Length: 495
Image (cartoon, rainbow, N blue to C red; front, side, top):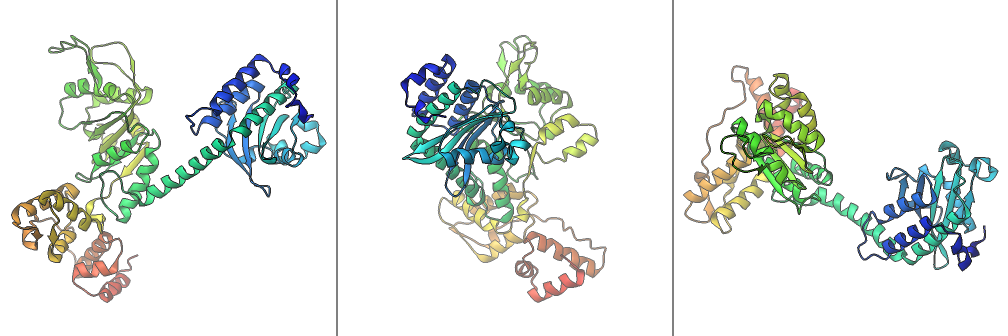
């Protein structure tokens, strides 16, 4: 194929209106000040339409046969992430010859039909052009189809060559898109491990694992079900997911579902039409409608009345609602997050919670760790909350801190906050001692009807679980030596 065609003005006459319009659209996109990651993907979609292909690829050649995908698309506008989906042999042929290729029947060409990927993917027609930068091959643009398309014509080849020239002029920006995308992925992965969650404190292993899950799901629109005991911070987690999502600049609305009369909850969620009931003097939007475009958080979802569950299911499945007393359907675009401290599976088995709604909510469950399993977080939380209550740096002595760390915290962080607020009130200085920490008695889980050995085993298991298997901390909390703990672990065959 004659490469000089690209430089020959007369070749432009061979382009049709669709190709001209496509080149104009591509040119505007490449020269846009607002570069997005999806730019190249959108351009490949234009190419597929213009040359009537089924797939298209924009690949980067980095030397020594290393070829990576910048973007690749299918005819149904889906991303293709694996370079092996395309014929590496055909791409390499473009690179080695530094020339464009156009084949109507790849299967019938002995030079190309030998390539394994051509056979596996049943590629029949292919068109490809090199992208140059300073006389060097920078990459390859490829389009192919599994059909023997006569539409893969010389004018389509010219069209792709013109596009390759445009791409060459915009390579600095394309490089920037690629580098920014890679850097963004690296930062997200790093943040999900080491960075703090918005308004959530804690460096313990359970909190690091929680942080990783939140960062991952926040980038999606998946429905999240937050599970955890009362006081573990379920609403804080819901807010964190919203603040880390693409909906962060939209509304975040929360609704508590517990102990609210059925009719009132329904009208709060879905709104009502004027005259729907006594007192409905005007049309009113429901909270689901108000939060359109943003995030809607339903707290204590397990307590929602059974009759309201069907309407909520429709809102989740079809993203549409009907106001109370109305007949018209209204579309909504929300990200739904629900939370509960109940066992929804048991509620389903008991007939008080719809099974289909449970599965719609349980797309991405997140279990929050109770405070008693967050070893190492109590000193951090204590310092943070005491500073808030005292409005100054507070000194807490070791006995007071040990008293807090040894407590079981059935009310979790909420209970810790109450205890520390009382301590701040009782103490008349910036020092908190053991006498200022007032803790209620808690039930001990040890079965005192058993033998002494049963008690020792149960108590040791509890402490090892509390301190994430750390024998030194477990021994210190029990007032025994580490050697004693090691012997008992062996004696009781504890893992």
